[in-house]
Image (cartoon, rainbow, N blue to C red; front, top):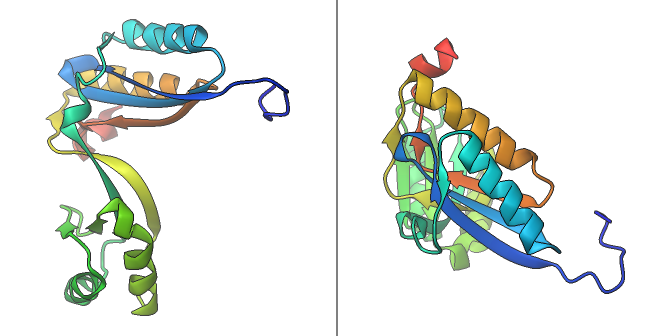
Length: 176
């Protein structure tokens, strides 16, 4: 069944939105042939870990569809930034750990990625994703529930991607 070889199977893409532990925003992209089964599984995961499934648009406005190119800590920030600007990237973000993210418009993603590679800056990871415009920092207890929720959602057969605005600090992760 999972191979897609069934004749007459009508798969549909569905996005579920909701709130996780601590008021975190969560979006779940699914591909399913049975909406009722999928919504029940997703709702169960949210409920089990202190969250709730929301209506369409309840958290979607907090996320932006972007292309990201990730570079590890220690990358030459000035060189990556210069190449990104020349390639037409929208933004360059240097994280606390000194890793670098180059953000692009989804329609320009491939051309920016190819230009960065041509300039000698091969990214560790390059993908189209949903990026949260703000984040919610979680304490130890809430972070534990959030991680369990995300793992349960990702383990569901119909789930393709899970996006969240949860911010779990290194110190909290070390305690888990």
